[in-house]
Structure formats: structure tokens, C-alpha cells
Image 1 (cartoon, one colour):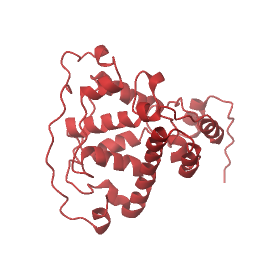
Image 2: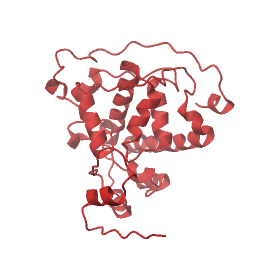
Image 3: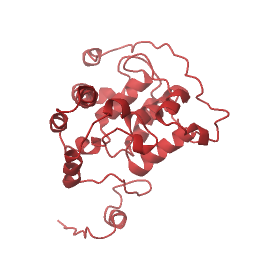
Image 4: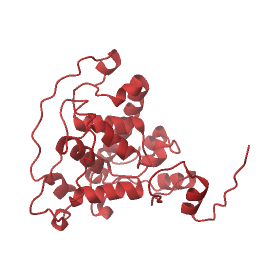
Length: 261
């Protein structure tokens, strides 16, 4: 066995390009979110969810965000769900409830994936477009371009902006959610197959029968002032909410999928 010695004091991009050739794809980049146990411990030690209930979905300006950015550490089990759950036990009830609900969602996604396995790559309960290929993100829209750029550069997004991208890909552009979730997953440093698949199914309406509609209203609320900088501000493609689409149940439900609540 050949042992490769890596000098961690060298430039990180050089190390990846030279020593991990063939193990990555696309353009190299370094996320602003530090990795490793020490970084995770430091993030947990300064965890403060004051105002989380009101600010968890805020996107811009970034200084107004309430998201804790602990998901990469949780995804790779550097921090565990019970550990983080306990860390916020003394927070105000409204903030604690909202934050712990997010942890419950992660736990639910894991259990669902463990139960149905690769079935999660198919429409669970309702027939929606899963397979149409193509790019579902109109990057002429500043709200989409800013969000996709953050995904590509940092590998992480606030949950609200993940919903924007998933909704625009599926509901607005009518591209297959399976391809969209894969495109997002390839860039996420917290890329949980369970949570990402379930999130896209939920947004597209495959899980509940009702798709999440993305419109200018959400951008104005969660990223005030962003639309004023957009080249399409006078002809916004998402000025109104999309029409609701009636869906039908999947023809054959396995007993596991039928039990999904």
C-alpha cells in the first residue's frame, strides 16, 4: 500500500487538485464554512438561537440571518442531533420549538430513508414531474442567480432559499425534481440524501399533493431590496404566485410509502 503524505500547510486547492485528482468534479473552491471537529465544537459553544423563530428564513442581508449553519457538522456526524437538541434546551420556548422542529425533520428524513431506501428517488404519494431533463434555474433573475452562486461557492444555503430553487426548478420551469435535487446535492457540503430528496419531494408536491409556490412576495419579505437590483424588475417572471396544479396519487404505493405521513 502506498502511503501519501500531505503537508496541511500547503494551499488547500493545490492539495486537492494534485493529490485528489479524479475524486472531484467541476471547478474547485473552498467554502467559507470551516470543517473539522474543532470548528464544530467552536460553533456549538457559541450557538445562540435568540430570535431564531423570526429570522430563520431571512436571506439578505446576510447579517440579518438567523440560521445557525450547523447542518454540515450534523450531516457528517461531527455534531449529533441529540447533542444539538440539548444545547438549546434553555432557549426561549418560541425559538427552541422552531429550532428543535428542524432537528426533528432531519431525524424523520433519516428514518424515512432507512425505511423506503431507493424508493425515495421516486414519487412517494403523488404523480409529479420527476424525470424531465434540463436546467430549471433562470439565472437572469437576481434572486435565483444569487442563490445558485452561494450554492456553488459555499456549498450551503438557508432552507428558505433551497425551497426557492426547488420550486423554481419544478413548479415554474417544469423540470424533473429528481434532476434538480441531484444538481443541488452535488454542491451541498451538508448534502444528506435523505433530507435533500425529501425536501424536493415536498416542494414539488410528490409527498403532500400540494407544491410550494415561489413568488416575488417571498423575495421581498426574505431579501428586501434585492428585486430592485434585478435586470428583470420591470418584467418579473414570478410577480404572481403560480397556479395550483391538481395531482393524482401514485398508481402503486408500497406499504412503506403508503405509511408516509
